[in-house]
View 1: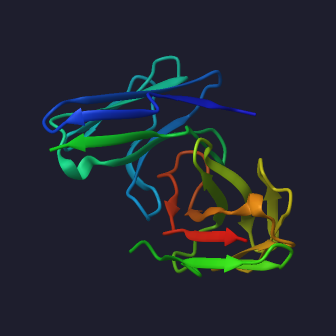
View 2: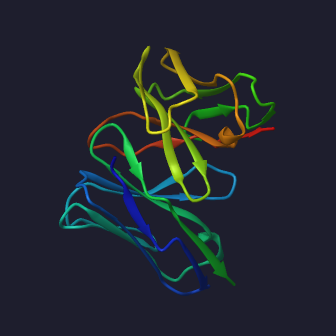
Length: 109
Length: 114
């Protein structure tokens, strides 16, 4: 089946640093999505991307839909303690999403 | 909240017993999904539904069954619980396929099989 390779698996950073994570796939997708999961909760949608090459921002978050439609990245600028959590990428071609395994972010104050 | 509720939030059950988890939505969305989340595996699709009485299998469907008799409710049943089914289960809903705004997830059910 389709798989997404999400990296890195985990990150330990200092407050104020910028963060970058990415997802790659052997399959193309029509939509790329980025979710964040806080401990004990379900994932929450951060950013949705619908067009190859699209660059979208949501506050300190910026995400891009790769030109080949097989990859996407998420950047977080000037990290703060509440950025802690697991970030998931997801690709969509049909009614089902395919998820990456997540990037666990730890922010040290 | 987004109008999706999972129950129970926590459950401990014994091996071999049947267990049913419930997902209830108030958004009138067509698509509903059940995922399990395990360390190192991310989110894996168990079953999904694309309408009342219309369901299909996901990648890890063995040992699970689902039912959707009403738009708002999607039930996941572990027919005979095993320790390998200890996990956190998430329900998700979506209003559209194709160009969509992604899923909305419930808060999860933490199931422990002892």
